[in-house]
Length: 128
Image 1: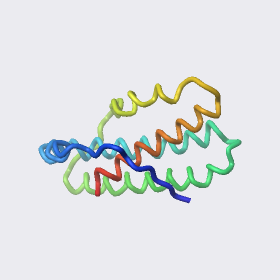
Image 2: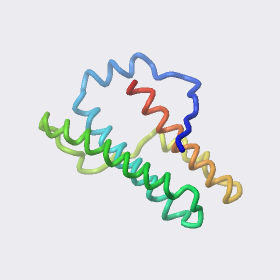
Image 3: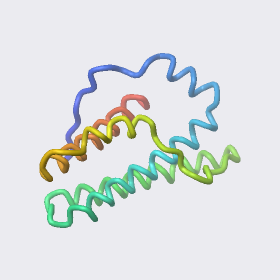
């Protein structure tokens, strides 16, 4: 079952301009983001194996994100762009992660699910 949340603020028009100025760097960053999204879904399964209701969705999400990575990687290969040797820390995620700490285990769990949703919605909004 797929749900989405509505974002309150759209990406700036400047974002697209910056992407187009260095599209190869954008592809590298996007490939990293897809790998991280797949890993996050997998890590939720590892961290919460007792949450059986989310496991099928997290498996599906992990596979979907790996498929997105495969698509981006294919474009990179066509353009002779290599993957980053190391994945850089994502400042957007770094700023949001403290919001998932503290409180009860239940609230941390729900916060992490919501964080994943916000990040995915932002990605979808940017690729419309």
